[in-house]
Image (tube, rainbow, N blue to C red; front, side, top):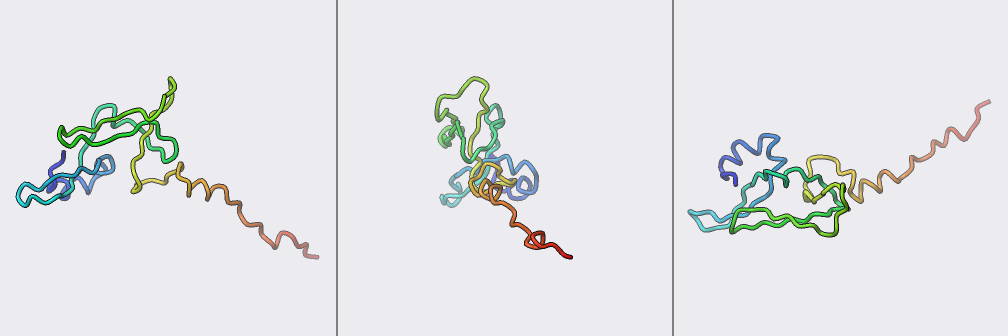
Length: 118
């Protein structure tokens, strides 16, 4: 877990922030809920993102300060393991339905090419 103050003052200003998970916590002084970030190390940090074809799900184990990963279906040998990074991505999601729709839209034909100029 990242210290909330250090997270705001330092981590949010670096590329490391793009590799963190939102992590809910309780402010010890006020008892109010607040959010910090967690850095995931080990194999969990190597999963790629997929909007459509995730085969691994994850959940926070707040009591133990862990992220638990589970296969969402049978995974074939050699198949890439993919999770969802969520909706607020820092890159173009080539896997998203809206991106696929944009790629399928054909360029409008230029009407001027239909006429011959004599």
